[in-house]
Image 1 (cartoon, rainbow, N blue to C red):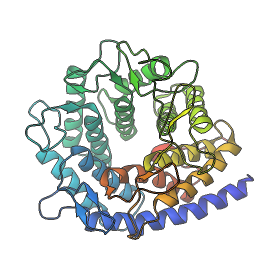
Image 2 (image 1 turned 90 degrees about the horizontal axis):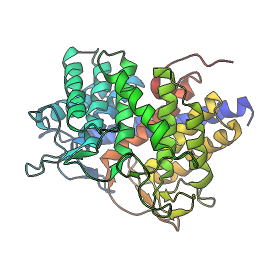
Image 3 (image 1 turned 60 degrees about the vertical axis):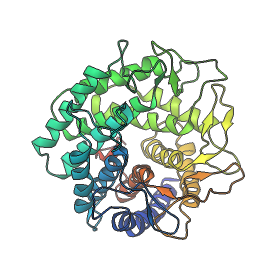
Length: 396
């Protein structure tokens, strides 16, 4: 695709993304998705536009806090600060435990600790810290949380257990989101152990989690971070290959590591084996040989494909022509998920036959839409815009 054609593609898709996100989704999820009386954000909005489920999970509060903080960074003219503070104050008042960790739900009988949830609290804190002018209070909360994670969940061979109590099977997904949160803190220039912890996770990912033969990251690991199960049993989610690739390139910029080869291999695996040729959507799961094991498509995988394809296309990683085509293809596929009777909602799942499951839109997925569409909006506004909002000059 000629440079002028790709620029035109960015401008056109960026315009549509901005309209959907700024004019439809963000207003809807603040006006109807927030509990303006009790605090926090509802779990879902039904396809009739009505909220479902009282604020319960901390990950929803953390993700919605991030969404509106990022909206402010993208210069949405709506009440992003009020919405961000609404989620942040609810999260910080209702979910902290006495040990510095955060409970996963408001169910007092549920005492489990989930690294996935802790990671999103850290992520929301980083974006709120930047949006609020870097108040020391938020930095101290994040530092205390990371210290407690390293004390309670650190694995003896690197990385972390996925929660308390410790389980025999280890997971890569919570580590990926912890890396995302740590990189967000590094990007703020904050002090503390954020950089060292991020470096250690990148080392684990590039030396242990990424399969040396396939170049991909599986979902589950045995003790010692060896692959879990037989090759036929192992699960590889294409969306996570794109997500890991993006984060490793972000880490290369922020941490000064060399992760480009690993990122290119991850993206290639996802693109080569994880895209349905007919529907042009990222599939939910494949096995180690790249054979599809779940041909459904979930919304978030499309946004991760879009975000990573944008980065690869704009900065020349891998095959630029493939990446530019993937930007157009992934955005087109994503618009099908967004075609709902109430603007600002979406379909979470597409079946193998191409039909969408008619179900409420979960609030937690707006985070993924912000990561993908936010990257598109930023790049359309400035082609020299680096990953995750990091401005940098791209070498000619």
